Image (tube, rainbow over all chains, first blue to last red; front, side, top):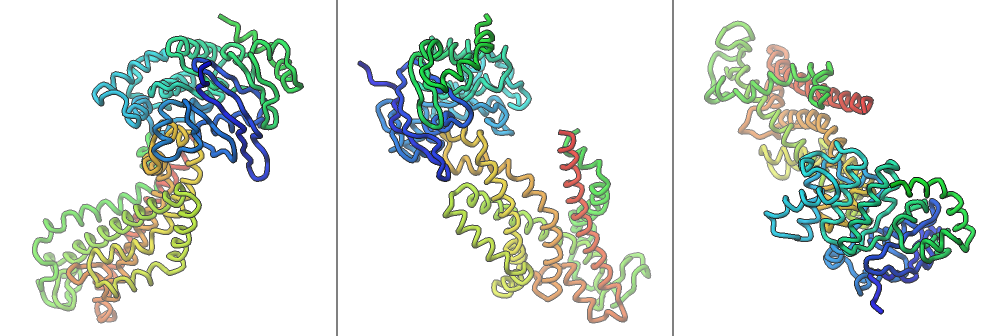
Length: 258
Length: 276
């Protein structure tokens, strides 16, 4: 049996005496999508940010590609970030207000020293095409783009370093339903082509059903239940799971649109 | 509407520019308009203004051309004002950024130092510094900047504390940027607008402090300054008050112009927000 790509053990975090995440453990295999679902304040985004080491965990281990990320800092951590990228929810605030499409996509290529310098501009155009955007957007300011276009650039930025894992923190929650379906299809295509794993944070099971192989439902910072997405949706074992499923039928319909 | 057009559409900005631009042009053209030494004796002493066409603002008590001194003095006042403000803004922005981004220890240490500087009046600090180091143009600029950097530092820190929580800063960490690169390339440029808003106040106060230092004989002795001219006229204040009044008016015009430009910039920013 091969080792999981990401293995989180007993992750815990408190903010000012409030337990936000409490002994969360899960595994994620290469090429797999694990969804973290839950209501607002259940701790799913905190887990995502701890996995990225954007928030320091109080306790626990984050084994990624066989190494405990919590033991790394400084340049060692920066080097490992090449393989684990993130797409944020808010397409407005996840880009520097002064950024252009080119500068946003060149950043990971430059910092991780991917490809010889003269080829990087070409790679940016290729990335834009790969996420369904025109290479003509190269010099445009990020904030001239629509929300859907910005989120495609965010996905392109995450892809630029050719990561093994992308953490999608409510990445599709803030875009229109029609664009959301296009982006879900894009993510599925990328996974099929490149074998990328996704840690998919979302609060609605409609999207989760369309993309996630397995789902963990968080409640008050703890994993209430975890298992194959179809099983969780068909027969949720916990009250919070039942609540989320009950809230979802309308969204299943949207996600099932061709 | 572009930022420049919004700025120029305010009455304050137009009035400020109408006053400051002639001063800047005169300062830049000083070596052309009045070649040679402005301290040279060119006529009889204490010639009142408008008596002789070659010396329209008259002469001082040594027979030196007041207009030539005024124009050369504009160079010093504007140069010191701008250089001191630029130095104060740079020092303040860097210290504020490190305090806001560098963690709790750096923040505590730098903010206590900032507060220590703020407790000493800027003019006294400049006076003490120039007295110890000696009056040169560079020491006067640095002395003024020494008392002016805490305000931009505090504003920069407050902005950085707010910006560092934004997702694009987290995104910069995710794409492997180093802390210094994040602080000075991602955060600082976005923290600058409110810091730059202080520039007009700093320039205006720098011009006044320079004039006050010169008045006390602590300006660069090799340069003509408006403060020095006022001090020079003090000894003949009753008989030739124009010697103090003319550079005094120039000082008021320069400070008022810079202040009005600052007001215009603030109005333009407010109107941008209301459009947004």
